[in-house]
Image (cartoon, rainbow, N blue to C red; front, side):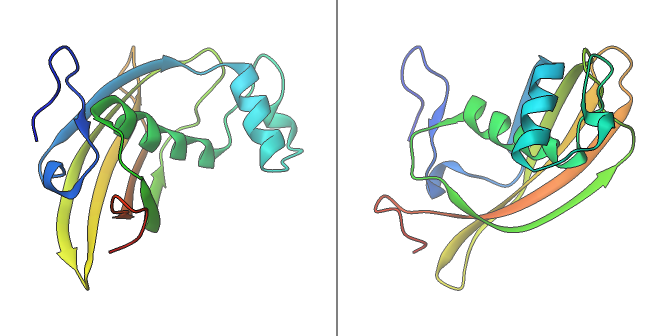
Amino acid sequence: MTADAGNERLEMRAENVHEGTRLGPVFYIVSAKQIDAFARAIGSTNPLHAGTGAIAPPTMRLLDYALLIAKHFKGGKGGVHAKHWCEYHAPMRAGQAVRVDGVMTDAAHKRGKFYFTLEYETRDAATGELLTRQAITSVLLNRKGRMA
């Protein structure tokens, strides 16, 4: 399926998810408000996650996966998280501008389901310093919202 005229995002379906597809870049500025909200959501009381000089909890970068998917794809029923790995290289701080880039490193039918893996890096947008490197493998849900 091709993208709609005026909208380059593809529908999130197995036939549109291919190994080697590059996703991103996505740019944003990390806000102290985002960090505080995420820290509260995970029940963190760590003082490093509060105030204007806050450091983002490491797991906050899981959100970059969703940003990359949403920028490239539309619609679909989503996926179910199957596997995840991550490497943390440097803290992400409030006020920091970041860039996220990803690539689909696997996309295949296995055991009657469609699996895909998105590997991505989050870097400081100004310096290029690597902050995190992650990969998430998901099972794509079909049009009925099932893993088949």
